[in-house]
Length: 362
Ligand code: FES
Ligand SMILES: [Fe+2]
Image 1: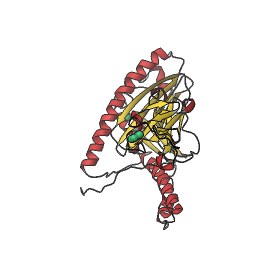
Image 2: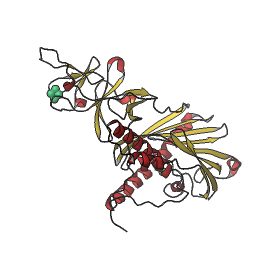
Image 3: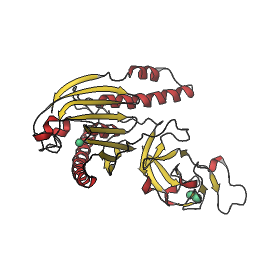
Image 4: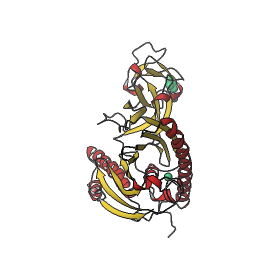
């Protein structure tokens, strides 16, 4: 019963854009980021566009992220080898013959900038397909970064998990007066969503009164590979998005940026402090619980989960991540002529979780 099973919900599909830092934090100096255990040096190449190279100089493996940027190239801090945004070695100081040779180059990942974030393509040396996930555009915005000691999957599920809000965050959102809710799960292109129908408007102890006749429109969404999004609307009076961009730093470390946006006739100066105060408190509670959950999973040598229909998105998210990862692995194996069809058979089994409806009390 308690034998370690080595099961961990860790998947890293590579052919996707991942957020790695905020645009404002990538300035004149290079900086180090880690994408699923892979150290990368980020810097601004020609005309300021972001570039991402493997953070290991081809010469003697010094970290390029400790170097400096000169005319759109990153210069190694040890002997000064210099690389462009594609990872080609452009200069070897003191070498009088042509410095170009593929053995002196370093691997590059495609990088781009969108909505105030730098994004990196998960597969080195590959041409990206499509653009990063677009953030909504609303009048008010505040962003909280947070480092979570858990898998990407646990972080995604936590943001989109409604039942825990009545317990872990009791009194902040829910858990004061139980309400019945209908949840409708649907598959989206490269993702899935749950729409919650019939929740009367209220926040913690602020319930009833003139608001009680109004209902929230509420959606929780997952988009491949690492975006969780919660949207609330109250008629045309209030619209709130919490879009969480995740960077899988390593199998059990995930960096999250909570992008809270809203539009409302209520002045931003009134809404912002409420959102910030509640947001930070909720985040602290979630981060502490996720760390404890991970500790327990490691202590027992693997995950052993039991779910009910209230866990509306967790398995659907896991299937999408695994399916994408397996499809990439199968394609690679086929390219290498090594496929025996087993991966493809497994991928075929991984049909999307079907659309469903569930009513629950919260
Ligand atoms: S280690 Fe980078 S130039 Fe020598
Ligand atoms: Fe939470």
